Image (cartoon, rainbow, N blue to C red):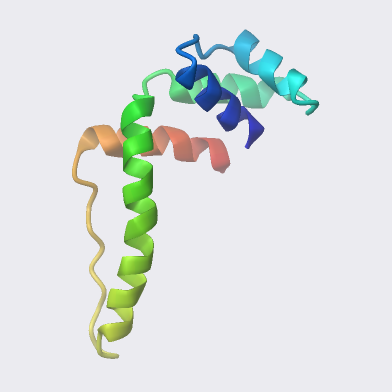
Length: 102
């Protein structure tokens, strides 16, 4: 998680998100640096618009409780329908970020 925080910090400071900068931030935090995770993060974020991913994150987090509440109102025999992401750019951004976690 500290790698993602480092990338967000670099983005906020308008610095390059690269292996060297992420490694420096993680080292400064006192955590052990795992080069494979740093490389994976930099590669995953290469084509991601971080601003759009940040804007999409609160919407996704707010949608989960609403979906649970809606699901509780459904009858036993009814099936739940999943909504598709509204745009390919959001889907691509979230795909890149999700690859970091498993």
